[in-house]
Image 1: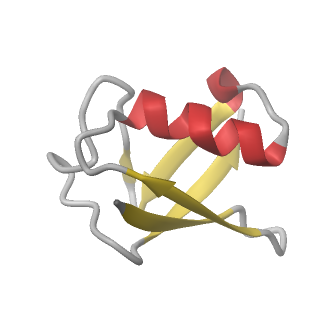
Image 2 (image 1 turned 30 degrees about the vertical axis):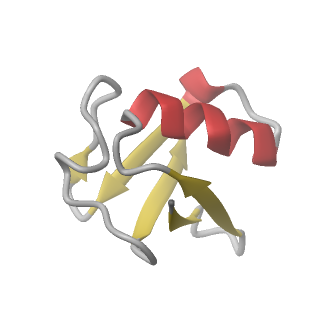
Length: 73
């Protein structure tokens, strides 16, 4: 179990507990339950890289305590 921090750059930092084997789509669904937004409207980025829904956190080398940027579309 790892904990990933999502920063929406508007003052919210959300901590989400998940498994490294979860896909980005699964992670967005867990995140949407905490913030109350539809998971389809969430975009996750790290720098200029936009994460795709079908790839796992492990494949993107997202580890415990890592920060991701959260955008709403």
